[in-house]
Length: 259
Image 1 (cartoon, rainbow, N blue to C red):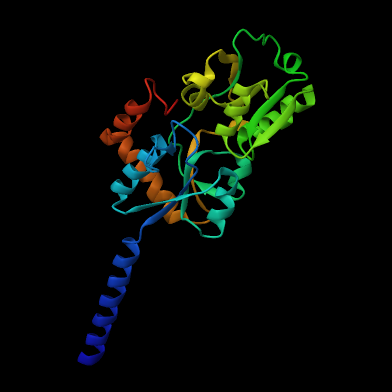
Image 2: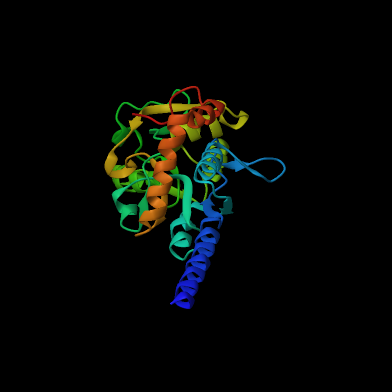
């Protein structure tokens, strides 16, 4: 009996070691580092931005190491599903369509979509005033879906790009008439730059939940409830302890979390 008890204790000890080792594994996070001010590359090649800082704060709260893995935006969900990483933290909108493929944490920010065009452009009626215009969007984004469903039937030509930075380049060069994207990304990544001089926001905020969802969340594989709940709890924790606000104030002069 003593031998059996000893063997049982040893087995539990081994299991405990494995459990600790499992908890100690880095959290592999997929990100597209071409979306300022949320994620972009510094001159030394390192990733910087709001998403990156939030992710590191969440890992610190969960007492795990962040391992960041770069991926183009339209490949993030497929790569998550084949286990290239454990979560996606890359300004991904929580939509019903995406919920069919992945699970989401609670939101960690929410900002409206906007159109940017040449300053002084008229936008009294979106459907009428966009007829014949070339509108650049990031491929597979919520902005792509909205523009395809709403602007294209009104006569606009939708031009898709692998990154929003490429959209800004073609807008500045005159190959596009407009872009539909996140308002903060347009403002920080384009309007406040030299390339964005002479451009401005035009028209209303676009917030239709059918397309733009419930805010931006962190995606995990379907059914990974343990990780989903752990990250959601960490979001609430950094909101409560002031770390979220400290990061927010580094990048924004307003409450990016939203209502």
